[in-house]
Image (cartoon, rainbow, N blue to C red; front, side, top):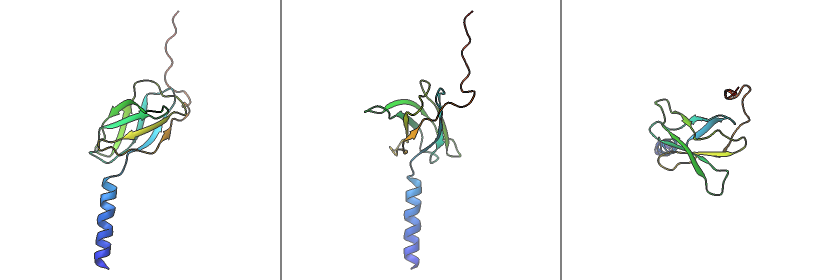
Length: 112
């Protein structure tokens, strides 16, 4: 019985070490994607999976607490599906870009 628990603990540790990143937030009209990943699993690549072949839109590191904040190339579109992939190829579940936040991104100045 003791051996069984040791094997179970070992398998659980291996699964945790190989966890895929998780996207926690991404808002339309903004350029930041945040989430969590295993420390040391960076860089994290953000893909826009709205297309038949996902397109890389940004890349960033994982900090010491296991968080990432990746700036992407263009403003995000509501409803687009994003995927985060770590350096070992572990991919997150699809995350749909949320509606723009109230106040959203700063407006561009108007020409007079």
